[in-house]
Image 1 (cartoon, rainbow, N blue to C red):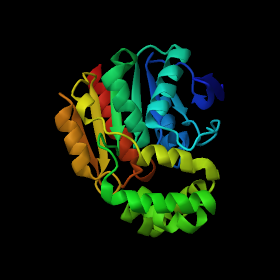
Image 2 (cartoon, helix red, strand yellow; image 1 turned 135 degrees about the horizontal axis):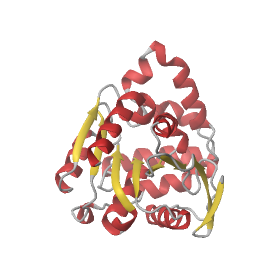
Image 3 (tube, rainbow, N blue to C red; image 1 turned 30 degrees about the horizontal axis):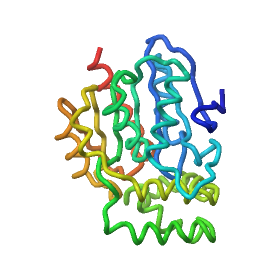
Length: 270
């Protein structure tokens, strides 16, 4: 299907098609990347009989661009609702990483009718911390008016763990993901504005009743583990798993550990 018209735009969607379990997992990626962040999860859970859908947010990956200066998180949330409804998927397991987690929590609080469960990875219910704003705005301005190349060395440690960046065995992986970072269109600044300027959702998440798994990399410096702990305390019945040797992109850095945690969670729901 690759481009699906929803909510006044077109989203790039990869769909493995119906599986033997009759259950669907929808994957919502983090800022600066695309649904490719979940390639290892799609392969794994497709093999277990799940229908897997990974999509790119508006203005990112292979989805259509957005003309204004900002792609707000509320707009990205509206896109997700429109996509789920247009595909007529019923209740899904919704996995959101970072920016995708902002979407997932809004779905959980406002549209529980669309969710069988929620999986949150490296995310926060809070606004962007004040201490980050100046640095992130400066990096975003450089990316907008020059390119991402001058800021790549600053961005990679935000997106990935120290272990991932220093392990000689991960050199090829680092090159791949640095290349994907540099491959962003210059208009990516609009999506970055949406993340930087987002409002918190702390007041809403206590309403979430869907079964919820929270994952966080132990070396995540963008959304530190303490933020995951606060989400876990706010969502009744939720569980928290820390992923060793992972930073802000655990699905890429430690895919086997992430797959095992999600599989255990989904098995417990049956």
